[in-house]
Length: 168
Image (tube, rainbow, N blue to C red; front, side, top):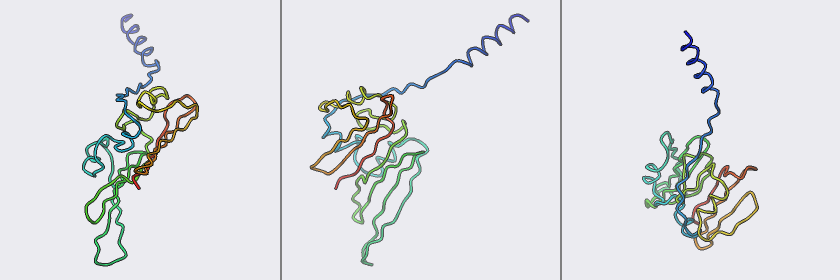
């Protein structure tokens, strides 16, 4: 009977312990310009995003009709995962490119290991040519292709969310 009490007591104490989920980040440093050209590390095609997005991602198709009746419509594909959204634009000529998005989940990772929950120091380690800043938001711009990425950190210095725009 004593043995059962000890076992139950041990199970009780072990269940009361606080478990913190650690986020492992695979950091592959790269230049800011290289990152902005391919932020997800693969082409901007719908098929590549279907493969790289986490399981449970919903795909929403929106039709954008052209003003001329003889033109086929363009399509916007929204990849929706919990509070995150990534949008791909597909033209009538089957050209596909990244429109933009907002990521708030740590299951979606960018090319150089950037994901929600990483620290500011880990963020800076992801780039080879990014100067340190004390601000709680960081904006990266690529003037040649017109892409912008914004990263927002909370008071504890952890990445809370990031947004990006596509090529112009």
